[in-house]
Length: 157
Image 1 (spheres, one colour):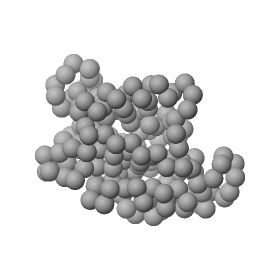
Image 2 (cartoon, helix red, strand yellow):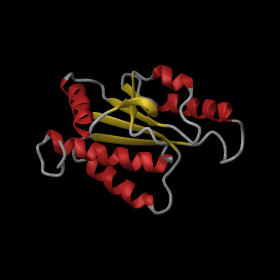
Image 3 (spheres, rainbow, N blue to C red):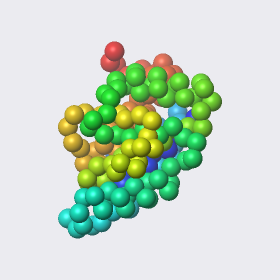
Image 4 (cartoon, helix red, strand yellow):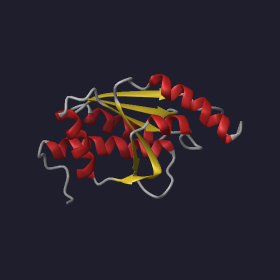
């Protein structure tokens, strides 16, 4: 099944290698496509609403038309690693066109993208920089694949 990540911004610095490693691992289990869109404005420039609106236009333009869209947001529903694996498996079994997971920029995700999403997923009630959220999501996609194949990576319940 195809899993598309649509993310605002690139990963730079020390996390870039870790993100690349887990995204590479995740491709063992999913047809993974990562689409990076530009941030709405340089850091500290522009008002939050216009920045999110500009990012929303870029995000919506890159979402696969038939994909089940989920956004990562603090106000989303928490999922366990097994819960994420089950959700992905359900879409794979149903012959779904795939899923698209969206990570917003510094100000969050605009209402137009929220309206397109059928699911809101929370990694935590805390706020993470998009680079950290991307690392956590990439690792969880890899973990979900190992769970579904019964491989020994996942030690939790």
